[in-house]
Length: 179
Length: 156
Image 1 (cartoon, rainbow over the protein chains, first blue to last red):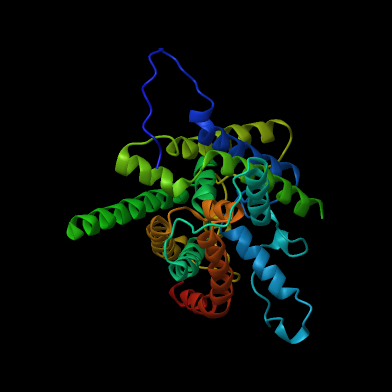
Image 2: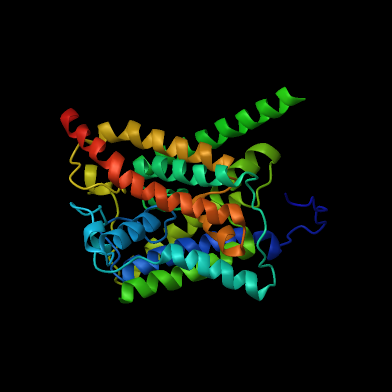
């Protein structure tokens, strides 16, 4: 995954390339608060950036407002009150920003992704959104909720860590069994 | 309209940085657990610190952010369901199962939902198919699972 690097000999050695993820996280946290506080994006608390509820809101908005009359659901699909009139475009922005970055740095190329089986990727997307909507937010927003002081979100963050550990143990066990 | 534009701009900035930094929350925990690589875990710590700083900053400049000292129960839940006025105690197991399942299957998909959006923008085929599955899944959830969630109101 990442190449092993030689350890720096200096006492303090802050490299930009080694801390890009930290900078991204800091930017996310600040931007989520700014977009919420100054553009009136609440009551759903801490809904600045989310990878689950924003796509869900966008898709439900598109289904509710589609041009074909008889395809509109009755009663309409649930949307957070703040997004009923305006579509939320964060998830479109994620794809667009990544596309721009890939074009600028000449990395854009259609190639098979991290999941080898394409059907499996589709099924995983389907399963993950159904599990995640029971809680209602992605790990990023869960962290922001925990930072704003919601004790319940800290519990859920623990559940996420537990899920990752369980999956890692399963993968380890599977690898060992094949050997 | 301004709100939609603001979310689009924020999403684009974050998506750009996410592509450059390979940021991912689930892989951050996984890398640290399996190979003790803290690079992506720093991202989660960064969100936490950035959110605390942003919260203080926005409230300092007369923004009005909600916190959870007074709000209790349903108002604090980020869940996307209407008219589900039940005690938080009923929702805790449900949300825990949801978060556990999301984390477990996200490791199988090699990335959190945000990372999947980013790799779809890079042109990875499985990321694009993941997004298609996500769209179908949202519609399935709204049609099939939301009516069953209303049954929880019996429990109080």
